[in-house]
Image (tube, rainbow over all chains, first blue to last red; front, side, top):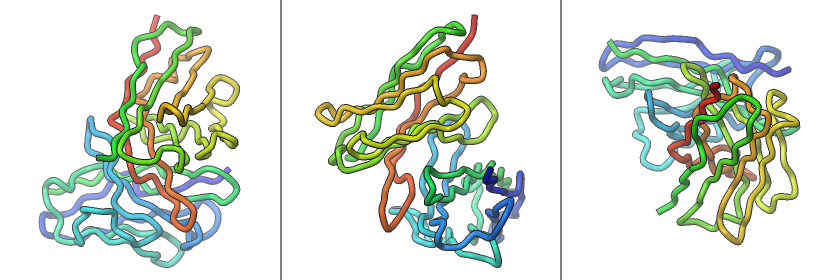
Length: 110
Length: 120
């Protein structure tokens, strides 16, 4: 069974830069998995940030960027702000069927 | 504007059934696959079911296979999730999400969710 791995938690200082990653329990993440990233604050629905590795969804500030770093997908937040404090989920597309969600990263800005 | 609105959640006893709905508006519903995604209290997101744009193909997470049925009525722009034999572990917020593909594969529009609580 495919497991998508994310850091459980991360912290960043206001104005700082942080990179969250998304890996596979077995193998490497490539653009063929069309990695996407979603932001969720408590009590709210997820918000789409990035799709197809590095394409920002409409209205998403360019402080958010996606990439492949080594064997993982990555979400980089530059100039972190207080309202970036959220949970971030990575999703990978599997051509054998539906997607797989990562366990999420809880980002703290302090 | 593009919108998804879930309904049908509530407090239900174990073993009972529930039918969730997701009303779509602002886009051509019949052109898109649709997901149900749930989130148990304090837990991460978990995909539950996927249905193709025309309803001819569907997939279920192993955790719900045999108990959940996804369906859609394209004439009424509505997605459904029939949940049978409810268990405590089905307690969650259930979101519907629009699935974009091919060429790009992601969920681009989400509803606000409907809460299902399984309790005696």
